[in-house]
Amino acid sequence: PVQDGHGKVRGCIVTFDNVTELDRINTQLVAVVADLKKSQAQIERQNDRLQELATLDPLTGCLNRRAFFEKTDALFVAVRKDDRSLCCVMSDIDHFKLFNDRHGHAIGDQVLKVVSKQLVSGLRDDDLLCRYGGEEFCIILPDVNLEQACSIVERMCNTIETRAGLGVRSTQGLKVTSSFGVAALGPDTKDLEDLIG
Image 1: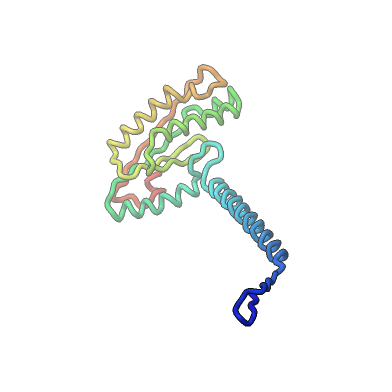
Image 2: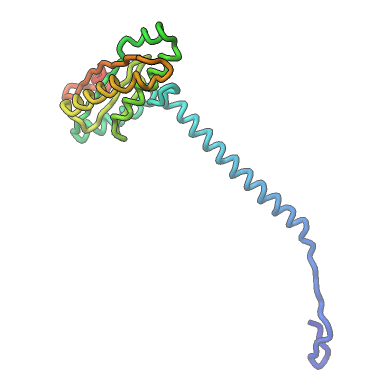
């Protein structure tokens, strides 16, 4: 306020600052930060996808061999250290070549997908499933003894026999079965490859 000699207000002084440029820069900065967040989210999604591609079999969604051995190596050490049980299951789709030869590779791919889905449905979160080879799968069952593993395998075998053929909807009457082998970790087992062997 502007006052006279007696303290009475006679007027006021007002100053203005032109903040148009500052406001424009702040608006641009907000837009850049939003773009960066959007780019960061996209990069994270792409990194997740790359991780998925690097660890999962693209057809079945099971672990690929590299990722499987990375996970099982650490698990093997922990199981050995804590003197826990562990079983390994190998599964092979019976007469798989005939599906490809008689019905084509697209049907063979569908058989692989439905069998892997049936295998996954019989596993716990801590169990590991890998597409080990063409039509071979390897399963690691931590904290499971041989008797328990055989019971799990029996259920899987029955599930595949009763459901897998029905899962290939484009071809009626397919009979899909799998053979299984089970091994338990023993005191002489050197490593996971030895157990698989």
